[in-house]
Image (tube, rainbow, N blue to C red):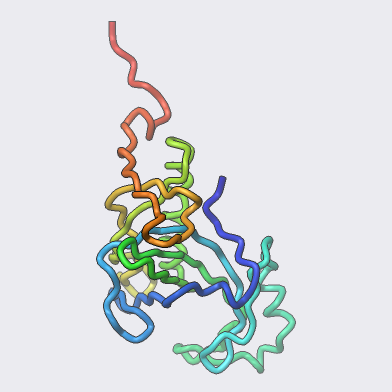
Length: 205
């Protein structure tokens, strides 16, 4: 069972406050600090068409169309220029992570179309899928928002990283309920070496 969220409409692509990653630093949409730890509640992908530095259209229904097909319908002379001065395709694939503050129940959304964002989102999605296969239930990682270096043709650049500190089981599929009715989150023991390898280590006679 995949943790990828199928978001039905443009209005629900962004949930709560936007979490931004810029040059190795994390902040909210106003430049304020983010919580030390957040629960990853899900991930998704979406297509957005950008003009004048803002999205003008969003596609969330899966399976998503090929962005190259959509960009091919718009004349290149109508494309805006990127920071390198070259025409930039208006339709981009956004990689999205939904986050929840376990203390305040505030929601955050990280979305970005960069290669570094794709790496970070794919990594956390894969680990969530693997933990569900190993333990069942409804496990979600508690993460710290950090950065990692990645090699690019322009040298090393920072990329976002969701560093897992522990796992919790969220009853009810992670729906936020009134605090007095919210069951306590149960910690999940980390997988053993045998579970990660999906095999037992044989004893030698």
